[in-house]
Length: 505
Image (tube, rainbow, N blue to C red; front, side, top):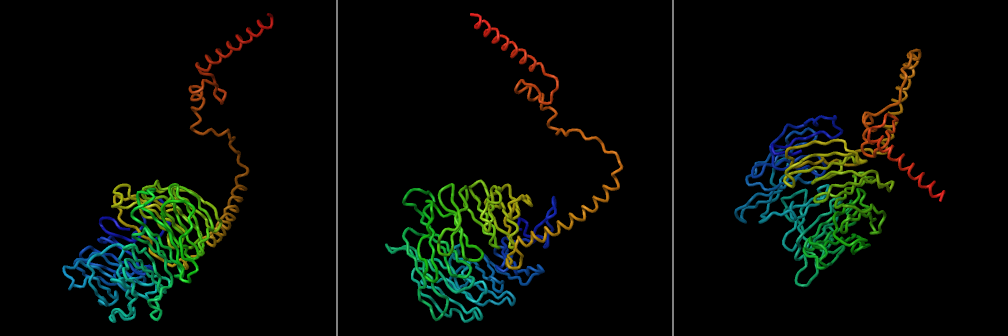
């Protein structure tokens, strides 16, 4: 949890009601923090000054690096390597460095003129750090992760490459994007990371009207979802441009566009933890949410609503679809195994949203600088019930520490064990209550009258004032009620007199 005066670490929920979570680490000044993908290490950086790596189990400092001009830093998936970018005054000064964290040794360096979100981190690693590569001019370059001092060990030629994404689990394939140029369509090409199969295209997809892409590899590295975006929508239906969702498989079983049933932008897409299904939120508002299998066949519809975000539970059972950003914050919690909607909730002005690694808690947060007021953290359980809320004067960042979902039991198993405990407790309470009732059976009971809620005291008077009628409790009539009653009696007498005179005539 990072605030203006620094960051700290909380234990996970649940938290005692009405109290702040305890701090496992005293507040430490920093400008950014991030966990390694496996949750073993934590990185805290101070802009233009330093980077410090912590051990997450003990929160002790493993290594601190003094780095003048530091702009950005990132840990490798298991925290073995630290990658840093420093401002450089000339191309002769190599400003991108890969460090070995435990020894603080610089293993590899090169010069990079500019830093952007699309090309950082420069060197990409697979989840087990067995594969590492980077994008260079017209090619993809690969390293020997056992010995970075060898430099580039082999290359894959791809003229015009503008983006690269390495599959992480496992690091068997890499995808490269080449933008549209001089009438030649844009393309995404998948290559094998095997050195013997380099430069052989495994799968390819070409399309026009595309300036940028987002890559989404599944677990198993067999399928790749590509969100292509054009800056201009030639149909003039959207001010924000045009987006399409494409799908490629490494076995060439599918190469094409995902068949979405509603026109409009692709708001969000996410793979399930198994990598066998993916969920998409798409279309003009109210947006639609659909789950597809690996063959791109729709499996289940999650309905329509003001949604632009989807978060799949790490255990694969629960799904949240929500509308954050410029939408009002509606959330729908789904049980995917039962194919039913559990509950709807709301988290207005949320900037961050993510499931906990155990899949039992869902966190939303309103953070600066996106919003400078009403900064807060909310934590819901897996059914959508609000469990915790904490307000901040200013909150910059909040992240779950990553853990492997396999470490935690399924929620169904946990519920069964908790129910067993509740049954045992109920039996004990029943036996205690039975003994107490035997002791007090001779005592006289106080006669109980009909319960009247506090708000019903003035109900009769209020109804008389509103409707001029009689109070339902049978009390005395007000002046207004008496006047209305006399008026109705006179009207009845008058009608009766008119009726009798008509009969006589």
